[in-house]
Length: 113
Image 1 (cartoon, one colour):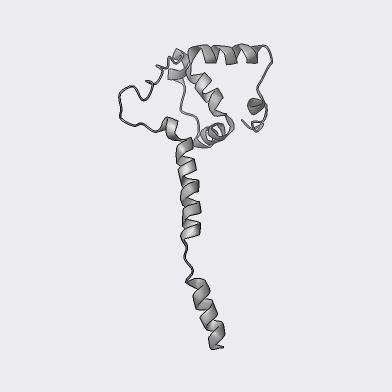
Image 2 (tube, rainbow, N blue to C red; image 1 turned 180 degrees about the vertical axis):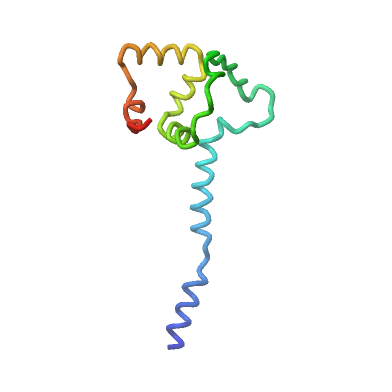
């Protein structure tokens, strides 16, 4: 019995460094993938955000429900979000939709939206 308990103690006391190093490497990879959106404080390291010119009709609308915002936040790809912030991008998306060429992400939205 004593040998069994000693074995358990030694197994539990093993160095967790390999797991730690693996977790650290994974964290470093995640941070590296986000590097382009993290401000560094250096002049010229980030482009200024584009000035958004919203159509005047939007000023008259109420804020959408939180549940709808969450659906769109997870359903719309980042490339489409960037296009929506750009006047030419919005125009392009609008033209495509008017021509009945809807993107897959739009077609995959829940029917309740």
